Image (cartoon, rainbow, N blue to C red; front, side, top):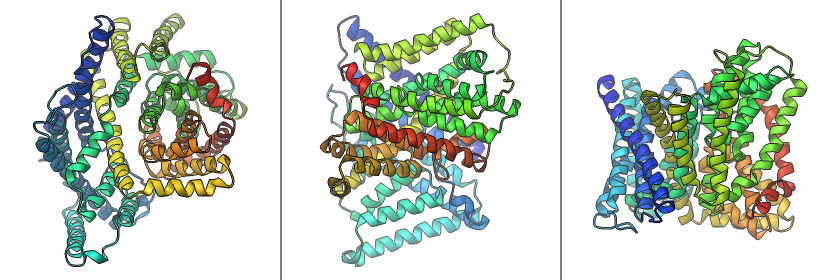
Length: 607
């Protein structure tokens, strides 16, 4: 039954997400050309682009949910006894149905509530929220289909458990409301239990926010939906799906393979050459696609098999791949830099410039270790070898993409979002006209994959924004800021920096990277400014610390993703990964306490 119903629905969701992404790309490109060529700005373009992105986020998230791409912390649940693990998985499935159903209901109610209201350019406001609700309906349907994959007895037990908890809360709030604990501790308990049980991080965040809505009883559900939409209803964040699209187009049009093969031909046969190639490839791809997991997939899919063929330990190769992804967290146009700039009101161009030298320092450290401890091994070529002239030609074309990205920022010709849109168009033209490897089917697949991955990221951003709003209502950020100022007041900025690094490493491991930045970025950056720490410098420190946590065993979700791409169990990567993370942590401490490393380039560029 699921196969016959879910597959057509997935095709509809994929088509909707891909069309929304293509429409957004077209709107942004037309808007820029109209403004610069015709000197006739389109007043409606910004509102349309943002509305399309909200719908894209939820249709893309629906596709990700249908494919099982949502990840949670697997460390604890994997150690449950078999029966307990089956029950935990069934409970996860039921909770995802509850969350997605609530999002769909509240979003559709919000659309009904805003009927007759308009955006700044005069467009109907409900046109943002009804598509959001439709995407959430698809999410709820796919969540229901996934329930059918579990044993009926396990699902029945999970439904009974959820019903008992809900009935108990209702009875408590109805007959003894004065004895009910505050929503804050209940949110914390719910979030911790979700993490231990392996609930995907986006749904754990959303459920924690919903607990506040249900327990307090004073906040309508439409506010929850409004905050989720508000978390992604920003033109700046459109750079995320566009840069992710660039990464998939590079993989489809052959740019990725050409660059990696060129690097192998140039440095692959030196001592530790394959590892050096891996680090250099991550440096280059991170400067183009913006998405860390897209970078890991593009580089890992080529070089991890090459490492196996050359006799290298695949666990060590995956660990270096993950460490290189941490290094690349501050290489423009990193998505987490864009998110931090958005939530903390920092210059995205300034953050991009500030991240270059720290990334260079960490890259040199990783390359030094690769050369020092590496061996000379024959390097396996990725497929049929191409002539060196063609490889240099492909590298020159890729260099054009880098020029578009950095030239657009530096010249002020376009914003981050507009630059990312033209980078995607450039990758389309290169693949279809220059390399002639990007046919209609491959292009469509790239749009679907990019929309799905974007939905996965943007849904987490939306859920984190809703949770951050609920925490703000409880004055949690204010109290935490006061506590950190009090602790750091006598010791100075250095203790605040160390505490910030520790918090972001832990939260980067527990949460997904974007969620940690959304919650803690707006909180900590103003405190850093009060203590005399440059905001661009501090922002880069936060992003690197978050990256270390994101790929830190045993909880880091990024490390699980790298292991899936490399096809190795996480256990074999732990030991080498800890060594690489120790090296990167030492680099981070140097970066944190030598502000010149981050601030020299931004100051020289006028930021």
